[in-house]
Image (cartoon, rainbow, N blue to C red):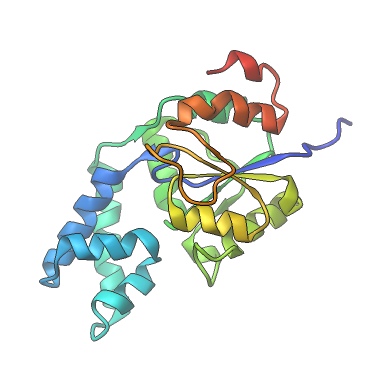
Length: 217
């Protein structure tokens, strides 16, 4: 039998593989309106925390279970009816990676990620670490360390691909190589920066030892 892959790639989802900025803003804006909150402020908090942490910050006097139920309702409806797009290069990249060499690490929930991937035609790997899988979200290293453990990988053999500061910090704290994508300027701490995911495709495949890496761009 061929040995398993020695290098692994751990992807953030929203903002890295899936362009969901407009969807996230719309969902959180609608949610904020229900609680008479400033949608811009709520979205700013939501970008860097998990939902339960967001509620504790913006509506500390409300029942978090009720808040989460309302958010889930809006998010599920958005998965069913919203318009999503994968970033250019995502389908080719994920399709070319060796099986068992990559995982998704998201602050969202797995069933919504699967819904979005179905809508955009992206493959879903066996390992998906979502908000329900961990007690600490990004920028804690816990989500990325769990993904490495589930893949049977050492942190130093993992590449994290991220677009957001909290995710970059999570990867760095996990002791992994971190590359930034889909941002006009490099996020502080990244080892390499690419203006788009498409630009990074050949190098990501080369890191993972994928055949034909140089031909994919």
